[in-house]
Length: 608
Image 1 (cartoon, rainbow, N blue to C red):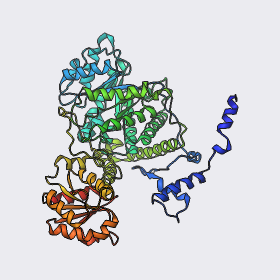
Image 2: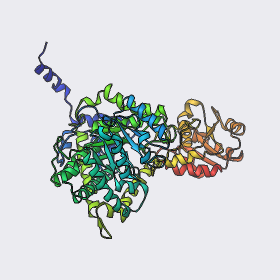
Image 3: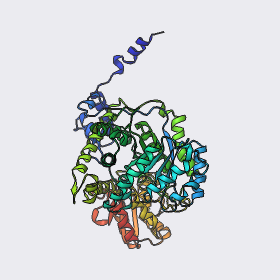
Image 4: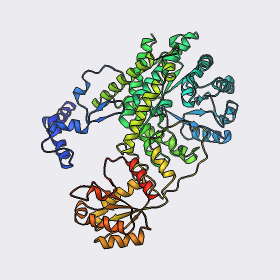
């Protein structure tokens, strides 16, 4: 047998080592075969072809290399060890139903509860919602935009002599509450006064009292860098307010918890949580606060699976999205993770949705053992580079926010009041929507592989839906009012010839709430027209689906015959041209990269 040192030498032998040039050559061969590179392109072009740019303008290379670490300006690693806190969210409108949900969650793996008060639930309902909960054992986090101090006092009163678990957070977040409600930021003046009162109550009871909720801007469409920059700015504003109220900087920092969104973009989410820790440590360093993990000021991160990424149609896909988000937040170092139930886009989640949500984290922790390793992404060239790039983008956003001046205000309040921050967020949201419209950001079940015949589960309307700019909202709006007539899919030739384009066209049309009637296999113009008259129902819109060869041979004749039979709007699945069907013979065409939203809107107008 070989010894340990010999094993290591064998694993690192010369034949196991490969150069970047070898990778470039192999990858270039694949890209040339798929048509993404030409024979004239150098192998080194693979880096540019496979790189992608985030909404923050960060270029992400296809793979990481040792030189990716050259010039990094930030450092640090997540400090959470072991399992993260599985935090379930509960909302109204029924206090007794909320209590039943809380007790079921705590009995089946959840380790803390996030109570969202608002329409349907008030501070007076906390006794009912938390009935039977041992508050000294189960941390409770509050969100009470309308009555933060009253809710905090009610929770402390419920605990009585038993006290509250030290990871409880009374949840004051006046800036976040104002942003989510759309209120003027001037309304936060009173909120900052209540912030100090809630913080004092929290300090007296040995718990946290302040939440910096970055998800409020994420829900409006903010990029990862903007969300981090906003969170840092709000956190800094709260530290200043608490110091002015008489707290030391270290005491103030120890009362704060950061909340960030976790999306199904795995590596950017991991990088975001890793960057958050480094950035907050820098804020505390500049505030002369110790960042020791055992001292006051240690960061506590709460990850919440993204609301905008979730869809109302084919909601079961949300289980996959939230699993990736939970994994990424946990790997990125979040101390607490909330997985929103897959059916939360439809209303108040039922028992099954809540069970799947809590089990997601339980399976990741206890069966996949994701939490056994501290910072499992640490040392990855790609993740380290992305973490550093994102941290720099976020710090620059913090600088822009801090530099804002408006009517005597400065910092985050000025940046919100003068519209500069919301304007930047709107630009990012518009860019994302354009990418979704062109299906460069595919949404399964919405823009890709939609199911027009699905029956959605019914849920009670949620009183706390809030302002969420869901990524697939424009397509969902089309699905909400499906087209009353189908498009006739004029499939040319046998199934083997037309199936690729027929499938593409069917899925594309379904994304806009448009059904199809399919001609089936045809052997010429007469068969196509006969199928149209029999199955098309006189639809004014026809979509040709076939091979380029079929288009060239009898596409023009088919278009003329279908128009004569009653079609007034003809679409070509593919690109028109000399080798297919002339562009002036069809009304529109559908191929990869088109603006799907604009195409579907025009098609629906033609159907009407």
